[in-house]
Image (cartoon, rainbow, N blue to C red):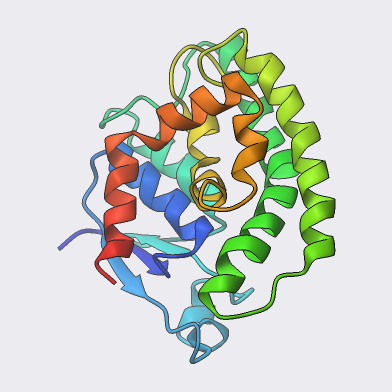
Length: 215
């Protein structure tokens, strides 16, 4: 039995981010579905894994983690000798990777996640889209992608010419948004569009999407 367990939903962007890291590292893991509709994430035993009652939660032996980006960093560091090299060893280059990880979390994710919620996830639950929120966050994301376009004109990937954890963190929101009207924001930035096509085609990501298709 795999020592790694990931608790959550296969449709959660945060959970998908962790899956991607595990598949890049070619690691065996057990997925434990959390009944979100039944509120299992707000009750024990889940709260013993994440006291904030949010997915995902992860176990690796006696180690318990929450927050998806902390999980991906742990996976990349602890299993550095497995699968894809998601980290850059050179200190200066790793610093650049860290910058783009922070950019994803603090600049890209807020508008992208709001658009994912409004344009993709709400539709999955038959909820009405907030057009004003969509317009506001499309404007915000477009400005972020202007910066990405400039960066990706100089580098194949965000941190370097190699795929790293900085790129991986973007995958879930990009996947969802490519199936919505927000795709136009990516298409209007040629280097960003090429980057999206590249990272979405990774075998690890195909395995993440296959998990959803099994549901």
